[in-house]
Each structure stands twice: as C-alpha cells, then as structure tokens.
Image 1 (tube, rainbow, N blue to C red):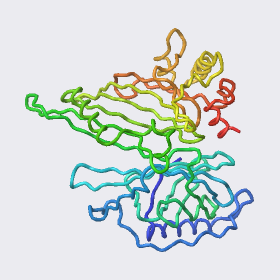
Image 2: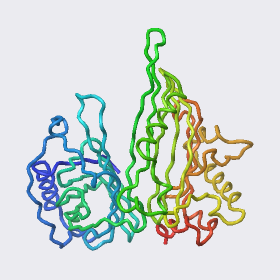
Image 3: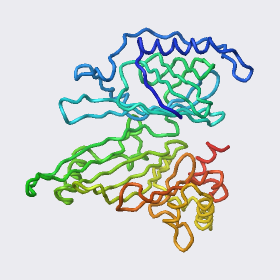
Image 4: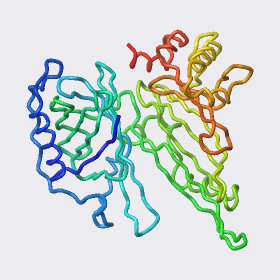
Length: 396
C-alpha cells in the first residue's frame, strides 16, 4: 500500500475525479479488467473548503459526537460484498496558536476474497464535508484507487468507488452486530512543579482509555470494558503523577488489533520516561474479550492439550527460517530456542504475533517479531473456542 491522500470535496475533489475519468477513458479495455457497466452516482456539488495549511481557529470544524470514534459498515462495492471501517480521531492542542485537527483511518476488505485495503490521513480530515479518499494499491500493480462519498461520515454512505479501470457505485450502512462501537480517549494530567537547580520540573501522566459509544454503553456484558468516569480517571492520573515524582512521565498507549467475530483484542503498553533521556522503561500486556459474554479470555485456554508446547515449536521453527533478521532473533534465543514472549502473544487478524523488546532500552534496539498464521494454528485450537470464530471468518 502506498501513500494515501484525503482530498476535500469541491474543486479539489472534482479535479481528482476528472483526472481519473481521463485516465479511464484513455485506456483500452482488456478482457481481464473490463470497465464496469454500472453507472456511477453523480457527484454532489459542494463549496471547496480551505486547504489544511490555511485553517484558522474559526475555520476548524470538529467532528460531531456521532462522528467520533470507530465506525463499522457492511454493504456492496458494485456487486461485491464488503466491510468498511472508519476511525475518526480528534487532536486538541494545548496552545492557543495551534488549531485542533481531525484524522481519519480507514480500511475495507472484500468478503468474497478477503483482500484488504487500508490507509490513514491524520490531521487533514474535514468532518463537515463528504469524503474523497485516494490511494495507490501496490498489491494491485500500483493502481490508483478512489472512494468518493455523497455525504459526510454518518450511518449511511453512498457514492463511487474506482480502482484502475473499475468504476462502480457503492452503498454501505453501519452494522455492529459482531463488533464494538468505541473511541480511544487520550487524557493528560500534570503534577505540581518543583525546582531542581535552574530547572522547573513536574511529573505528567498521559493515558489512553477505551470509551464505549452508542448502544454498547447499555449492554451489561460490556460494562467491564468501559473506562471509568472522568473524575475517577483524573484522580487516578494525579495519584500516579505524585507517585512518579518530578521529571518523570507516565504514558499508557492502547492499540486495537481485533474488533470482529465478537472478539475484541488490544494491547496496553505502560511507559515511564525520564527527563532529558532517550531511554524508558516499558511494560505491556494483551487483553482479549469475548463480546458475547463480556469475559476476558486467556489465550492458552483456547488451545487443545499440548497446544502450548506445539505453539512454541511452531514459533521456533518459523523464526529459524528468518535470515533477514537473524541477528535480532539470535539476541532473544535461550539455549538455542526462541522462547515464548514475556508479554504474551498479540492476537491479530493475521494470526498470533510474538514480539520481543527490552523493557529498558533505546526503542526497538533489539526488537524482533514473528506472526504465526491462523492456518498454522488451526490444529492447535479447540473447534468451538472463541478464537476459532476469527479463524473461520478469515480462512473458510
């Protein structure tokens, strides 16, 4: 996947779409890639918005409460069933001279082939305007793609999808039947300043929180996943700031890996950073929930008897074929064997990822990772385990 561009609907959108029409018209039709006969939706006219560099505090329009966070859609591109994911993020800046910004991360995959296309456009997403996303798909021979909607982010999206010489209408609607509606909140708290010689230092704490949205806030099975109330979050951060002391910075990062097949998997990394130091201490763990029951799952409970030993063997055999990063791999070998990762496996849509990193070092100095694909894991899983739902969805 190459660079992604998020264009403003208006004159820039029309220019981009016109360029694509010219490219389509200038190419001969081949039997393997015909031009779709479906008539595209006619673009709606809209006043061109200002470019990101020209934004001012008066021009910036923040996303609405309904637009923020994660959106999951199901529908069709032409006649092919698809799932589309959009995540709208908002960055607020503490300095009055800096304008707030909204970012958009997106991904879609065809349900008939599992082909995945994804990208992001941080800091340049105009929430009040229809979308016009363009990208270069390296996996499809560097073809230019474009997704143009007739409306801003909302419960229903219609418009035109183009890739190479394919040009078809699309229609998708929000659907959370097997996933979670959420946003990741980032909040910061500063401790009390203290003088250290000529410097004034203070502790700070910045945490990511999983904040459930919509109907998911009312389901009893989702209660334990919801973050605490704002006042509770503030008190907890202030208590940690006092515990850390001046010149220390506590950070909690959250990264969502899986939100489908009624499973939610994410990693939490806690860091302690030191004033004027490029080193930090880090601790991480994987969290896996069954959305049907609301219970937190343990990975090894999903494996058949002897599964832990067989998983270790798979990991070691696959890592030993890695010649590109053999030096990093060998740094972590013990008695000739690559052990199970201290922080556990990360559950992803591709499989189980083993990641190795020193708790206190330069970032990724000896970092190493291996992913064991779901197809290789199939014999290790109980056939009716929650994780087996993810395997069936992606590898039927």
